[in-house]
Length: 189
Image (cartoon, rainbow, N blue to C red; front, top):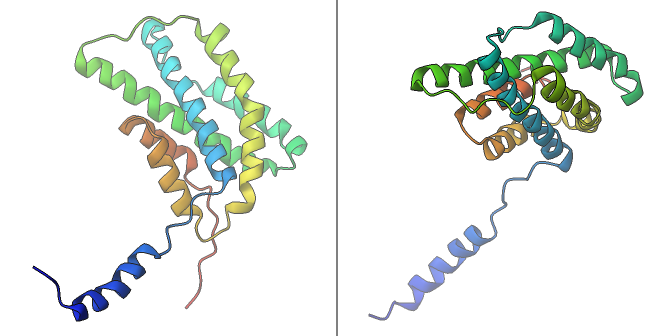
């Protein structure tokens, strides 16, 4: 059935508006890169959980956390970072790693299926990988900071973490690791 010309003319502007509507701004490379390196660190947390599952060691390792945070703080100046900011950032990374470790261990208990035994020891393999990743994490954090005060910061982080998360556990870890990175000012009324 032929459509009346007036109908086609009235629909055309609406369609043009849909086709030309702005798309949400994608996250800057610095945001994407930081979330990617955090994700790499959280992938290693899976291996830490496996190691702790088999060794029986607790997830909470305050001495190791303190060592990692102090090491990062000592590198702050080399990356033009504030030590307090680095402390807060690395504390969030430690907490995110524990989120992943506790969740994975709980999954294994609940399913009654143990993970594959670790290929390397916690101290020899896994921690070495974490230590090797540390300078890249600091570099990406420094590159991210100018974007932390942008009004779009939280939206960028949320969309990037959702897209990169392999599952709900990793999403929780990424959310915890990036919590507090956006420092947008609240407007007073």
